[in-house]
Length: 305
Image (cartoon, rainbow, N blue to C red; front, side, top):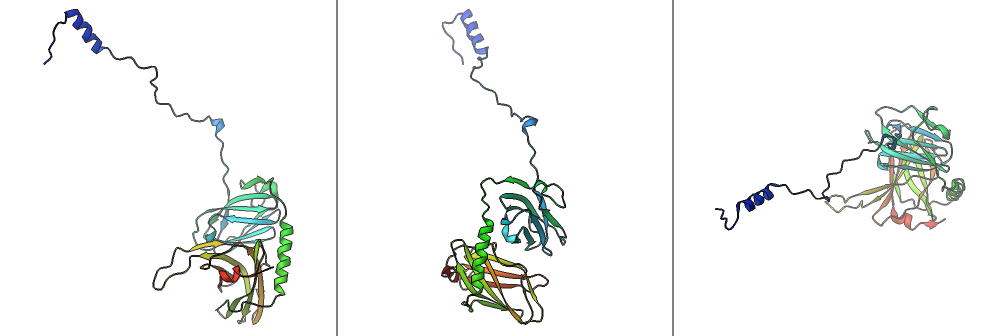
């Protein structure tokens, strides 16, 4: 119940008018800001990377206008990569590998594209020898990257030094015959290992006891860590680090009923006592695959060359 006392009628009218009048909006009250769309001139279309078709049943070849010194694959575990002079050879490790970026340094320049798996043999050469038109069969490509002004062209000198040390290793006496694997009448063993400040130099012995030549297509190197597992227990979280070979002759053939040697240089990387280097030889025209685990202690204690 409203109790009013000592109020005249004019005063009451003024009081009620004051209640009915809306309060003024403060000058500091702000409205929600509209989302500003950039002008069409400010939007720049990004060129898509060139798709490079890769299969698990054939090898894809990329040729550049200078010596290739670096190949970086986003999902390295899904692809095999080999460098030979101005060329890069790529093959998928498994079917339906997801697309992944590919960065290649040749001379003092960089090129970037994308590896895309196709479920058929790839019979195509990606010829990038002309810098002004990095594309397939002379067509232009958006995969071209600008020149790297900071790169130093010392790759030829480094390659010469690596090949010189591999030549020394070929003359050494075999030292590690116990590190070996036998499969399909083929014997793969570690003959010698050396280190310098940049690379690990490896010499392998291959005994071919069959009548069919063994043509080495890919030699794959992976550093494996956390590979130990307890008795009747699950394996720990295993980690793999691909190591691309930086030296060594490509497509080496070990004729039937003969013994041959393979030499490679890989980037120096110190593994733990529980790690090892997994070396995989893959045949060009066949399915005979040799996998040799090299204990980390053998590499870590190797003589300096």
